[in-house]
Amino acid sequence: MSKLPTLAPQNMTEAMEFSKMISQSGMVPGAYKGKPQDVLVAIQWGYELGLQPLQALQNIAVINGKPSVYGDAALALVKNDPRCAGVKEWIDGEGDNKVAHCLVKRRYSEEMEETERTFSVADAKKARLWGKQGPWTNYAERMLAMRARGFALRDAFPDALKGVITAEEAQDYPVDKGEARDITPSVTHANPLDSLPPPPPADDYAEYESTAIEVAAEVIPEPVPESPPEPTSKKKSKPSVYQVMNHNGEQYKDDYTTEQAYADGFTVMLDVYEKNFKKKKTEAAEALAMLFQIRDHNLATMGFLEATTRVHVSGYLNTKISRLEKEAGK
Image 1 (cartoon, rainbow, N blue to C red):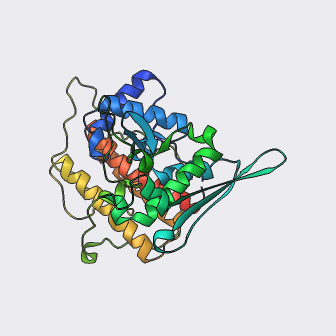
Image 2: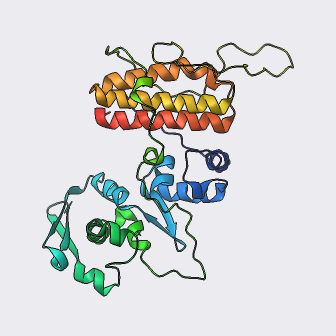
Image 3: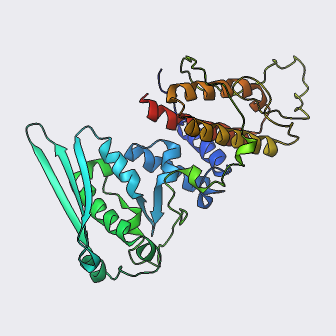
């Protein structure tokens, strides 16, 4: 099964239109909403680093006028580099003697280079970070690890990270009042789903059959109405109700009278499936097959949605498909 292509504009016109649609979506971080120019800049930085557009919006932060990436994203970029031979992180010592270590191994044509960097409690105190309100108080040990990681990754792979520092480090630098501008949310969710409310109680979950189905991967097409438009000058009217369909082509719960209600119902159903996949330990390939069927059964209805709602719904589905593809090693 081949990978599904990610939405990616091919020229400036497409990029501007794409940025405008994304900035109006409820799926992007709050600081990007209504700011297509910021979305466009973040996407461009993502291309420079090797991130797809939606990955860039979730992992790039512009702090004090300078781009940065969250520590987990920087680690992923380096590990994905074919020259990376491994990254090891650990913390030793107790109390004020704690020291975070990060060892990065990089392959060269005929040799292996190891880069180790550390960051200790003493270093944090010297930089006036230890005990600082916020992450340094709530997650002090992780912040030590993030500093060691940032230094090691940047020194070992400056070409992969293009000199961009980690957001965790950038947030601790003094603000330049002349150009301070943070266009990213303060919550550092690596995954956009982490900020969503929990799914409904288990009693409401949809049941599904655990039957493996082989589905050929294909490009997610632009949703179109099931019936072709009539050859008249009249604009095709929208349906009075919207129905969310499960992987068997059966209606999930009630009819929805608005696009927003349909979008909410669709995303809730996907959360239900995701939880059931984990609960029943469904194989990734089987779970992917079900999501592809859900996509196919809902294409006709999606064709009636406004562009922003359609992008929101399809983007939510694509996020879950991408996650399962990684698990399946596609």
